[in-house]
Image 1: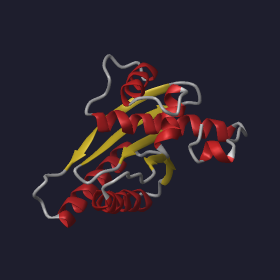
Image 2: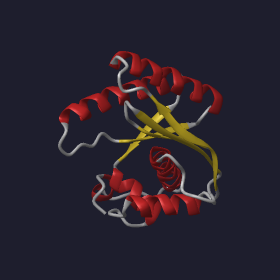
Image 3: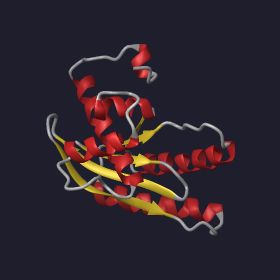
Length: 173
């Protein structure tokens, strides 16, 4: 199974593709889609769509894993990220790829075994699990690969009939 993890944003969209055979994770490609800050917002969304469409066409993923929308203080940024997420979902839909969403806590739990792990801990374990020489850069790509790892493990659990409790599904580990 090929999984494309996405770390949504409108300035930077991290992406990370990996193959998962049920036991082994193999990195395929990772990086970031970037847009320039002084570009009209609609044009930025268009660039994100076009670049992701190119990735979807080239990588042919079986699934897309994306972080659920999360914000703490800045509602303006949250709205813009939500619009970018919509573009990412639309592109996946146009390519016939199902999108799966995970909370930051679910990703941390899946990758490190601890739902409140630090960003550095997640990056280091992502590097270890994928047998990379260094943590993936930029950080958005590392986050996207962690998202893909989370989906791989979640998919395997569903495949073998393992289920999460309601609290685990909501990210309360």
